[in-house]
Amino acid sequence: MTKIPQDIQAFRRRMQMGRTRLWVMVEGRDYDRAFYERLLETVPELEHASVSIRLAEQLSVDGISAGGKKHLLKIFHYLKSEDALTHRNRKGAVAAAFFLDRDIDDFLGTCENDVHVVYTKNMDVESEILANGDLMRALGSSHGLGREHLRPLFRALGDPLSSLAMLWREWILLRLVAARTGLPSSPRFASVSQINEDTYGALDESSLQELKEAVISHVGADNWASEWSLAEQYIGHRLENGEAASLLHGKWIAGYLKHLVRVHLAEEIIKSGTSDREIIASCLETLSYSGAWTDHYVRAVQSIIK
Image (cartoon, one colour):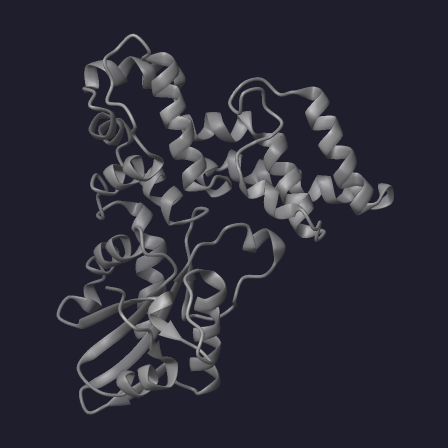
């Protein structure tokens, strides 16, 4: 039975009472709560503090509730307008934190510039999990394989995230330009590449040219070179710094990993029907929260509760 969403005004009043020190709001129901709960356990200042995590869809604004970034930001703006992001009660200081998928908001310049809003370092929670977890172990669990099967695959391919980013480089470039210039059909670029043969094969030059012409038609020939250059600089900087996961949706990575197993281990007996979600969930269980990758989040939370 689905729990009835709580009205944001009632939630604000609840925030003002009780022992909860940090109220955390997240976008999605699949992985966000488990991921952020374990991350927050690494923040020294919260060791003995009460923390509560809410999904965006559990709170309603003007009678409307929904999951995702847009609704979560509505909640943030409401609490900010009511000066309710931080306050003190008889039990001490209370704060609200909002954890959002970065997507390409940094490239578009649409990130909220507020200490209470924390964006993923990589594209989304799923890509964060896959970038920092044990991929070999996750694929073993999700496909019923051992390291003896997967080790040669990883040895031959190197970093699969970098491989996918390079394979889909033009697709990602077009996505950036389309989104920045407001191309009406830009949401299509959130899906898997449509300009690579059989999705993960060689670049289909005719498909690339056709799509590029459609984008140029929208952007304008005079602006095309500058927009393309901006996108290239963004991607180049990320790749040079070993940040391929910041260019890839987690579902893209999971699909690519599944493809690699299917193609390169075709002669092995492999568990059938493995989903992208199963790969990500398996990888979530391999995460070590003592790594340097958590610093981005720990410092952000410390700034919120200081």
